[in-house]
Length: 301
Ligand SMILES: C[S@@+](CC[C@H](N)C(=O)[O-])C[C@H]1O[C@@H](n2cnc3c(N)ncnc32)[C@H](O)[C@@H]1O
Image 1 (cartoon, rainbow, N blue to C red):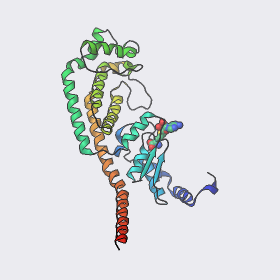
Image 2 (image 1 turned 90 degrees about the vertical axis):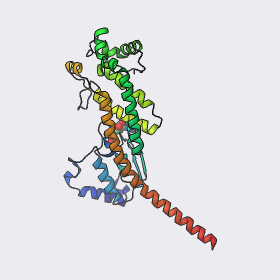
Image 3 (image 1 turned 135 degrees about the vertical axis):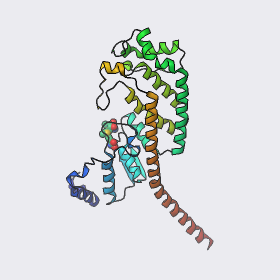
Image 4 (image 1 turned 135 degrees about the horizontal axis):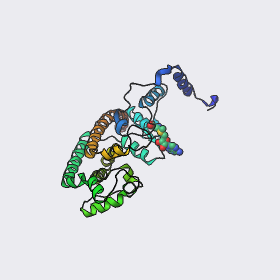
């Protein structure tokens, strides 16, 4: 922007930024996973205290009524906007996962309702798992023995997993739907795919869309941890073959742990953002009531 196009407030913001010490933006010890920021990983997430401090700094100079993040990613800036009580918060992104995560992270949910839905889901999961546990837990062994498959190979199991698993569920009358995508068996072992399908089937039963979406965020986060992917790395690399061979994650427990963690984070967010955004609404209602009262008084005089 040319210097002449800057407003006085723009200049004040620039001056305030320039006055900050060089290490101001480090936030080395900050909790960047608090509130709904920590529901799900996303590449190159904004460090939340940065947007919080920028909002504070701008707000000290001029009021903020609207916030737009045109590259919102998983919604860090939007969440901070809501926590700051900004009345209108918008975002866009080209990535459908970003849209989904941002929507869930910025939709406050009632804690009691969420706890209840999670309890019911967990109960259904355990019941369904127990009804076919012996079969699901033997799936890896059955694939090796009956189908002569190497579960670490890129071809065979690696490229044809849906074909083998569909034969398996048909033969054993399992009411599960197997997803289809390229190299699925390279990234997941048979037992893990069956357990993930079981969880997805049960989440799909939830009627209230916002709660269902919340559960799917925990499900999506679970998928990464129970896949054969090397964890803690940005790029997608698979574990070594011997590690894949030995890998047997507790899928349902992992999902339950992530869901419990996420419910706590949503509680903190809902309680905080609702209190703050409720304040301007309360003031607005109060002003409207005063106007109505004055109008009625004038009419009756
Ligand atoms: C670094 S992330 C943004 C982080 C985000 N501001 C936050 O608060 O965490 C960059 C995002 O820009 C999105 N993006 C890249 N090109 C885009 C485009 N042409 N239109 C919309 N979104 C785009 C990517 O999908 C990605 O989610």
